[in-house]
Image (cartoon, rainbow over all chains, first blue to last red; front, side):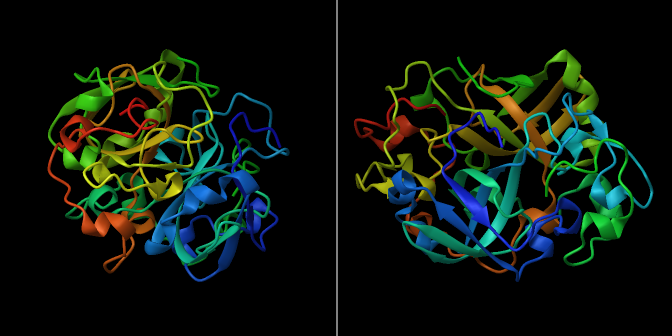
Length: 176
Length: 176
């Protein structure tokens, strides 16, 4: 799996296929996974155990994905029932120009070797490229923000792509 | 400015020096900036005008930054008064193993050529590598999450690194 960035660790989860992996960690809050940190980076998590949530930035390139370039409009997982397309930057889908995943997960335990977390939306073996603490003051806008097309779709707990129907030709194999 | 990823656009802001740029968009909510999207990517923002907030993922490498490797513990901007160090993955600082910035900004207007936004914490010229919609259901944990060392520091509006004191030897020139 080629990642042009420095890989700091790897996700361990019980998920091995995109189509059967929950599409968002917040829709699958209780499933537990771990980040195994590679040796030189353990020092970098000092202080992280004081946070309830972290952002995992991951590299979602899948060896089975269609060749580049990625289509700039795609049918998001949640719009498979309607087969509606959206611009890729208005979706959270994994097949992106740069396949960077952003997962908000709950911290269970932190050591220099691994982070146990709850909220799995990542395949086993996904490379981790950054970890950032969730900071309420920075990351939580007030009020009731408009969320575009997400405001009018159902989001069942732990829903997987396979449960949402068939993908379009370009969106079926891009990662979790 | 070398970025190993595909650059989809560039930030235009009135900020040209890290030390005088507000450290977080949410602490500087009213200042307006733009993302100039490069031509092939305009199609990808279709549907984005229905969102109040977006995440800008940016590449924060600065040509004036010290040579690699980045220190894994650093004094964050907000801890300069105390000169306390933290693991880099417990901070939001710009000098990271992979210098990816995550900025939550408010959408003002979207066209295929540019996105006007409010909430500037980025230098003019910062490369944009991804844009994701803010989705309340995905990105806003309930309750009152613990936020580690951030819970015990003051975060004045629009505060800049320069206003917080001198950096340590490694943290002074890493980006916004």
